[in-house]
Image (cartoon, rainbow, N blue to C red; front, side):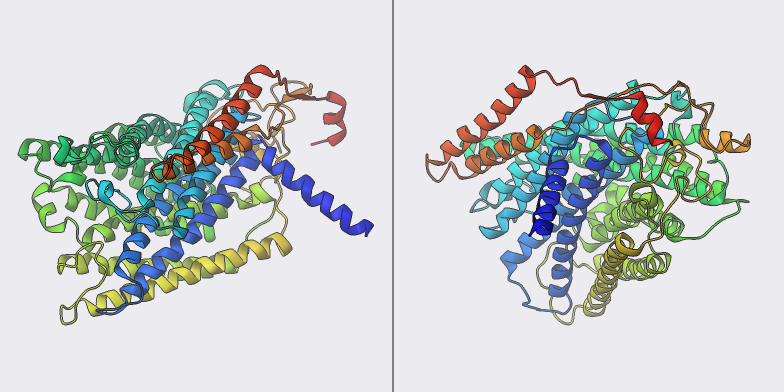
Length: 617
């Protein structure tokens, strides 16, 4: 009995620790776990879509359910899987790379995570009452007229999650600007930190457009306004503009951090410094700048006119230039290096041809004239999956294999890593390469069935077989995670033996204050510089002294529950006025938390000098 109660209190204590944590590393792991959960959900939806399209005139799921599947698959993968997993990597690694003990706003960091997670849960609760069915882009007037509450769940779920992401972006910008360690000038920052910085700037400027669009949609659906209803003098094209002014920079928010990942992986495993560091930083900014000038290429067939189409076509083609600079710099980094091949490196190498194909079809789509043929066919599906899976997902998997020993102190199993890679890689190309041809043969997007004798059978069959291969790869990766947690080989601080940046200079996993003494940064790749001079570890910039750290707080969690209850109330207040009670109750909970936070002084805690000296390194 004594044993079980001890275990229970142990579990309770651990749960409380994770619910109240403001440690950037734990929040990073929470993002990875939450994003991973939604990734599996989105993957399941994708497999259901592919089973429906395995043969002509199939009736595996109904047309209505199919619309819900494609809507939820796209929304889940972009907003609830890819973004949060990247935010998890950024959260964990970036403060370590710049020599900081935490992020600038630890409380806000925690609130951002819970808002994302509850927004995702809220969106997925719609499965029980009718999920959104207007496509992941939620175009008006279809979304305005969609019956039931599916689209309302989309609006409120993304509004909550988006608020969390915006907080994360602001937090990272302030952290990088104001908390770099001694000697860490901007041009000494690792590329992953740079791409985190630039992606956060994109979040800051792109997400408000989505927020505004969702607010207007909310008023149209819940309060009888007419922003997007043409019959009442509204304009449904405005939704497309608002969505894509957010949506195009969003794809760069998804790809820039993984560009940073590759810029860390290649130098580490080629044992060479990154080729063209300055050009890489410049190219990152150029991509971000041009990313805001291309949104209407999603709207070439809307009828904006030849002048607008031409301008956006030229801008879209121009964005290929900085991306090309990066691809060549990675190749030059590998050139002449002593290359070590492992899982992280395989994902990174596979990225280059896969993403290049995605970029090439992107330039094809950028031609406004040709786009009249490609638009709304499977060619576009092929293109953006090459960019988002062949780019972002490959990059996430490279980053996870690369930093796993740093995050959890154990190496992922290499054999399983390679099995997972090859099955996923082959499955990915089987699934999406053929879709370009299906599109050119005239197969439209978002169609529930295709007919017999249209020459589309074989292509769709191959595509679905590929999806099963990818599923197998993901399952192997999950088994690898469980196996590693139980039996994984323990990792030292510099897990790969050729680490160049500050995160490899501390223990794996890191202690909660990161650095006992802040390191002195003497150039680009600071750890490599110390190694070249025969030092085993970083030269400290300060004597051992007490460290000030923030306290944990349950308030972000409770505040988010309040917002979630209020969101539920908004969704159903059109049914009856009683639901307004939920709105008021939820907002009251949130406001009480805000007041508590504002009025109660929380000065954090100090870790004494004696304690630090007792711990050793």
